[in-house]
Image (cartoon, rainbow, N blue to C red; front, top):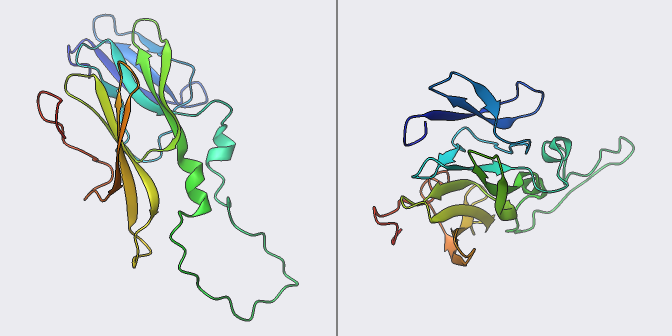
Amino acid sequence: WSPDGKSLAFYSDRDGKAHVWLWQRSTGKLRPLTTAVVHVRFRFEKILWSPDSRQVVTKILGVGQTLDGCFDGGAGQRSFDPSSRTVYEAQVQDRRLPASMTLSLSDLAMLDVATGKLKRIVQQKLIVGYSLSPAGDKIAFSSPKRLKPGDQYLLVYDLVVVSLSDQRIETVSDFSPGIPSLPVSWSPDSRSL
């Protein structure tokens, strides 16, 4: 729901691909907010409303990205050759992210509720969780960077804060959130994380 309670923004693929749709409470009318295809991979990746109810933030496909390219489960894997035989393959202590993580590259965009105009805030980043400041002037997101040393399942992230007024970026490297989907908790005045 929008903070003013007048509209509900939601994801729907009712026209074939997932887009942000808007329902207006007063009229009961539905409309697509944009033709940009959303690129959410987890249920915690939600539409965020600006405090004035005039804009929403969501993840979308980047310029030139396709849905097929984002959901290819075999990305980064060698093709199987039935005539080959592997006797032994040594494990290398590689801390890089798996190649399949590139499937999560996406953009964060701000959409104007009245016009549907789209402004890309972040382009082609690995975005796991994102949070809009209470003042609506900054957005923070966590971005996986590498595997944590000594643990093949935990990731090390960058915590990135983007100013929406001047696109200034501040990064906290080697951030280890307890829950990557909730990268930060903002102070009520939006000045501290």
